[in-house]
Image 1 (cartoon, rainbow over the protein chains, first blue to last red):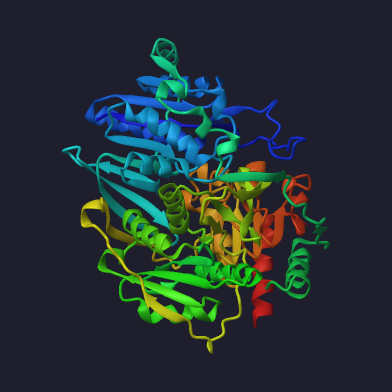
Image 2 (image 1 turned 120 degrees about the horizontal axis):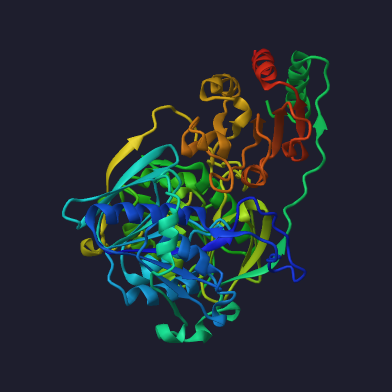
Length: 264
Length: 328
């Protein structure tokens, strides 16, 4: 079973996000960059399936050089090979262009399954994994919390929670799965794992090396354009509910929500 | 000619979902501005009798795609059916509710059609026929105003509970038409083999009108019963912070925040939640926020409309009793 995991590097969840003076980007200095949390679930699931069925796990990242750190993290967890797609022309690409570059990289590799996170916690779009499946002409199952590969390795059953129920979906392989929290508990990289990761193959590819035209990427090729980025709307200052005892405060809160906010 | 707004409606077991009425309502507002018509598309099996209701919320026309292969949602069948309809109808703007299904559908459709898509929008507008959208990014730590390339349709999904729903007008009857379908069995690779229903009757957090949420201050899973009692009294769903979920006190589906659900209820009551930035990110579009926490310096108070600085184990049960009095 050969498995590919695509990962993104994103600002850590504790990051303060500041809008840059151009009002289109965020301030990228001083951010702590980590592997997108949903992608970690994908790496872990790929490793578990490999441990059961054999085969190789290849990790593909896209972006500037710093993304190498996240690829090395996945290699230290136990993935076998890494690839970084890095090209200045990729700067400012939208989700569809990103998926096109990933598709070109994946097409040169053998695979039965592909994992991505269900969304990047930066753009919150949830398009790249799905679009990658589209460009490869394979089915995808999104927001998955359980994966069961059939004994013969030809099909997969996945649990997909939707509002108020969980759908069990069956698909033939190859297929792409986007990972949701709850799928597994990702392992930590062990010290020997980290040492080994340094020697694992990690190749770097440009768009040209993937047979792609740089003109189809970047800001100018976007189908969805960021016109303006702003801080979230400020909330008006709230009030501290007065009272001498917890019971008084509870009573006053109930009154305020009933009479002032008219919400209960 | 490229024009009009198309809205993809979502039904489950024959019931059209609220997020779809919100999307139709928003679609109607956009269409009115441009002098366009709204076409809703309803997919499923034996659902034609539900189509008229979409007209009550503003659809001028409803196209019904009725087929056994569309009985349960699968991405491949729905995307194939809708892509054909879009090519035939050539709408300028295509919108749907940002439910789990809507987001999945919109993502694959945007790749199939090679057009831009804005996910989980909190506001839409249209100028000279071009859609612009506001969407929270970084789970709401920033807001992006986005526009589209010339490729049509411009696709957007609307965050549940945000778009104002029109007053239904049952005197309106939309034109109802059957959509031409050509679903190729060979192209359908996925199928729903089982549906595991949540029998608790709890409304999903993304759709809930009110949410009572607990964090580390709850001290243990056994104490969430006081939140369940409050939730029952006000008709809310119970959520949790990441620390409560990571501690194993509550299931993952209950997590609110940047790596959980992003919610927009009318009332959000945070109990024993300090307000880590990743949590605030997930609930800051709630209309009224209440925080109950004994630490006066907790960051949650900077976002709360009403803050109660006290022991939640005393305040919450007393508050539940007060609410019951008001209800009677």
